[in-house]
Length: 339
Image 1 (cartoon, rainbow, N blue to C red):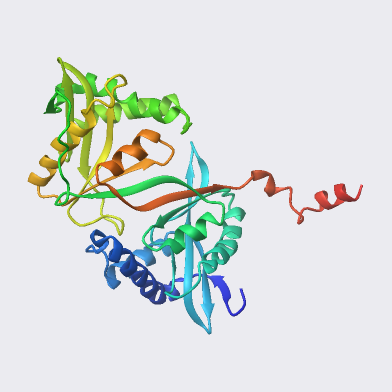
Image 2 (spheres, one colour):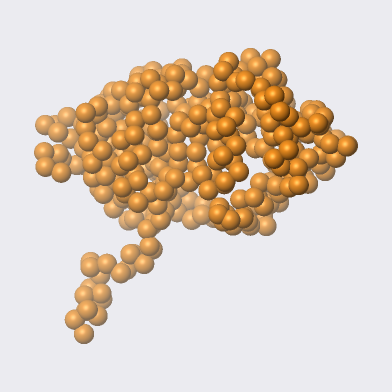
């Protein structure tokens, strides 16, 4: 882009980054007031960005106009035995000055992505704010697709469903370990099916089963079980949301929810949500957070109907790893082209 200079972002750029990010968040909480949380403070943001850049795993670029920082994009290198190497742009990792074009994000990505590929990261993910359509537009035009949606429900605005199931809802106890283990595969089976197609690894299923059982002994977790004729047919699991810029103050997270096949579309989910929201209100929470795969047809239809408002999403792009060698910087490629 003419008139812009690009260079690696450093700690000396943090004051300007803070100003740009706070301006972005002002536009976000105009649409989503719950994002005006206790983390929207220059001191906290400065410390957070400093820790991010000092982590040793963050790589990013800044865009400068007339010597002034007008936008930045930072990704962190994450390595997982299951998903491999990935560059992740956190929620606070991309911001441009008000009035700058969406095209600036695309050019920042063009610069930063080269650094990520040099570190073997061919999968790129970004947590994208949704109030300002500029960010979603820019990443969409970089071939990123939406994977996960993050949404909030205001308990002061929630109106209980009138039509519910004839079931009993009770808190889960440590004696319900086998029941929770039997429920643990509900989500995996649903995510494994069309059109989500998420692979299921046996070791991951084992971890999920154990996690469901342990949740019953966790004092910070609330498990609700729905029973019909003495049989468990569904559940909700709530826990205090981890504090961050994406999390409203006084928020609880609906971490996972499921209904047994054969009992869906019968009001079980509505009954559980009515009960869960009542309990969370009594415990002093104002907001319930949850997230879902955009390709999960049931979740992406049900939760918005309940009043959950999407405010951010995770987008992803996978670059063909053959690019590591099949590029015009490789003399072997040029040699083969000439013969």
